[in-house]
Amino acid sequence: MRWLCALLLCLALMAGAADAQAGDGPIVSLLAKPEQVTAAPGEAFKLDLVLTIAPKFHINGPSAGDAGLIPTKVKLTAPAGLSFVPPAYPKAQQVRVQFTDQPVDMYSDEVVIGLTGKAATGMKPGVYVVKAMVSYQACDDMVCHMPAGQELSFKIEVAPRP
Image 1 (spheres, rainbow, N blue to C red):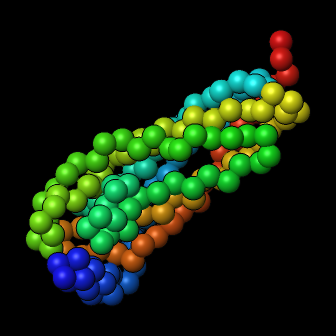
Image 2 (image 1 turned 135 degrees about the vertical axis):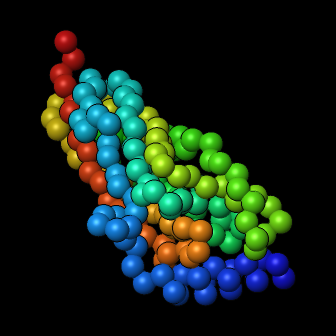
Image 3 (image 1 turned 120 degrees about the horizontal axis):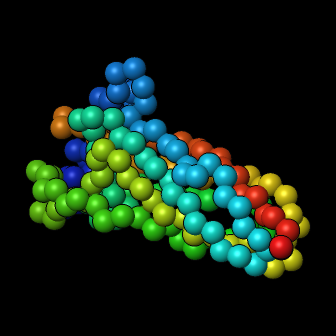
């Protein structure tokens, strides 16, 4: 019953939040660091997705769905030959809120999500584009916005073996 009340409260709060803008810009900005990674066939590589969250806002952590909220998730779309392990989400801050007995996982300020991938052994040299879809729900102290998503592309250069 508490879960249903929490869900109804969230839906009511989200209905009042028509736009997902913070002042002059988006609530969440995305950046891949580095923007291009180089790896030889059969070699692993790493990069980070950096989410910058506007002041006075937070986004839910990856396990926030336990409280009926929308969790932050990263979905990668990569060309054949590039594979990734599940994203490495940092530990979220646990915050107590009024609508649930359990603390809610939240991120604020800057969040760095680690990505680890590998180029297949027989992959041809070239530059390949990977798309990252980041979905999240942003909230401030008064209201939760409708769930949103942003896409970011980054490049993996597969270089010939030396």
